[in-house]
Length: 64
Image (cartoon, rainbow, N blue to C red; front, side):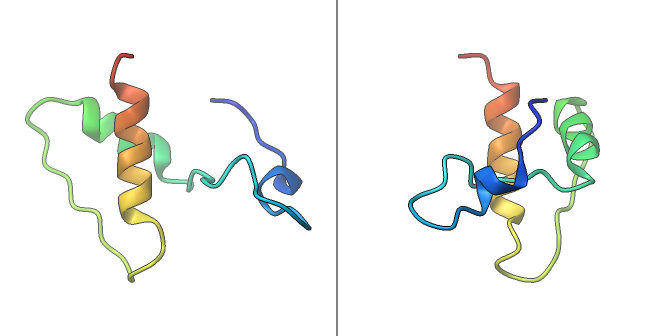
């Protein structure tokens, strides 16, 4: 995975190029998504990026 600098995400002005910072559990999410037959529950307060994390992981796992 590409390492992104903090200032590339939180810019002082303009639109950031990167808007997703993977959480520490992201690798576990990837493993669970690519393991056939494995159930997965993603939970947490609204607005913390659950859907974004799953969609980003699925994009990584889907061939172009």
